[in-house]
Image 1 (cartoon, rainbow, N blue to C red):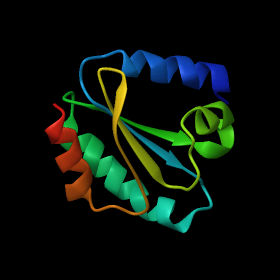
Image 2: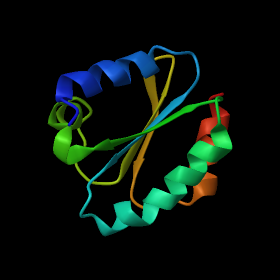
Image 3: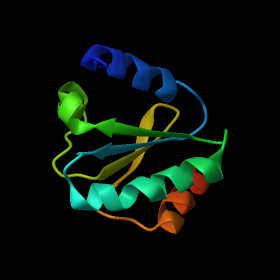
Image 4: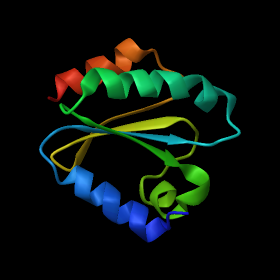
Length: 105
């Protein structure tokens, strides 16, 4: 199991990169999150090395949930140069997520 500290350090490493980082906060028992799982896999496949696409389990990442004020799942945060540039929640079409990533490449 990955500890909160390890997840935080890993996320910080990705946020320090110049390319955009999309972070999905999800819960295993969440129906909307389950619907998004294959979409997030497709987003990763489409972006390749142009962006970081991460998924964070809220149940095992309480420090990140608190740090980023996550109130519902799924929630998406997009970072560019370490700064949050977009946030949204709920089920999203792949096209919307890819559009946001492309805006900040």
